[in-house]
Image (cartoon, rainbow, N blue to C red; front, side):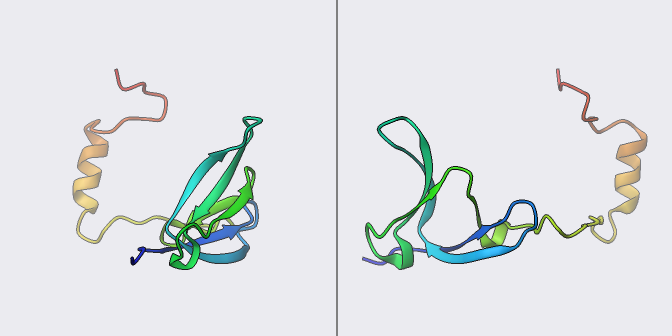
Length: 102
């Protein structure tokens, strides 16, 4: 049986430093008998029931979703959409962070 795996990064949430790269099927929440939580990476290296467990405060993210928190990113609009963006912003087709969406 082939298990599809993804690359996960174990990293420092403050600095963005990557501590480990692990290939696993998925990341999931696991509960212990005392109801405390921990993270589990399932089927590491594509091997059935080869799981790794991490404390709840460990930062784990799929590699293709990782954004380094130490890098200052400036997001840009896709080329050619600037005029359309300005139209929507000017005419109120957006929601501010204070709006509730009611």
